[in-house]
Image 1 (cartoon, one colour):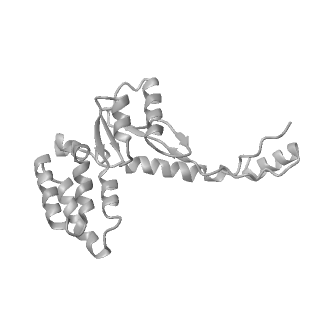
Image 2 (tube, one colour; image 1 turned 90 degrees about the horizontal axis):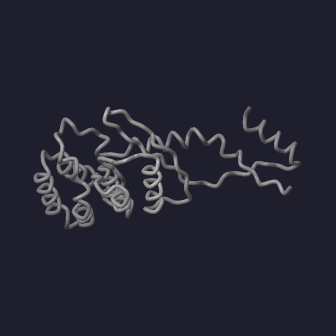
Image 3 (spheres, rainbow, N blue to C red; image 1 turned 45 degrees about the vertical axis):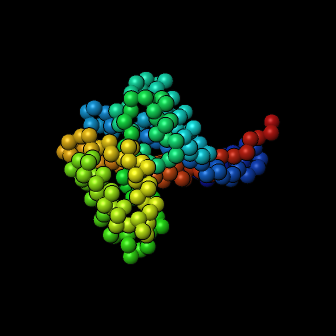
Amino acid sequence: MIVRDIQAHLEKIYGEATGYILPNRLSRCPVGVNFQGKKEVLGFWIADTEGAKFWMNVLSELKNRGEEDILIACTDGLTGFPDAIRAVYPETRIQLCIVHMIRNSTKYVSYKDIKSICADLKVIYTAASEKTGREALEEFGTTWNSRYPMIYRAWLTHWEDLNEFFNYPPDHVSGNQKCINQMDDADSRLGNGTQPIRHLFWRPCPL
């Protein structure tokens, strides 16, 4: 049965058109990696807006469902998100998504400087150790603070949540620990898969 069939059926029952559109809402699906290295979608949550309170509720629900602990949480730069994680899972280590940091860092960079900025940032997050990464950050500041001081400040402010992957051998660090693109991909797939049914919602019938 397609959307048109369902709409025709509802119109026949209620005697009125039912082509009401569901307002755009946010969907999020956290993806976990277990100790066997297998990825698992932990669930789907829908809300009007995304914020630390939203994620606090998600994390609390996960814990109530039996998710006892999270070893490493890779997140974007949402304000208050790391604090929400630590409130529910105090022992969890935080790793901010490197891709999101780079996107945010280059948002207002002149096009002619983007390649150079990205190359210098890569020296930081591909460093062999936390110490050399921090030294690379200081060198980045020396080079670019005169033109883009906000980039250095942002990386320095979040450094404690950016350097977690340095605590593990390089050959044990996967892209999942540095980037949340897989969660974004799952969200995108959800949006593409549900788009055809966004016209199925109708006004309550006044019976």
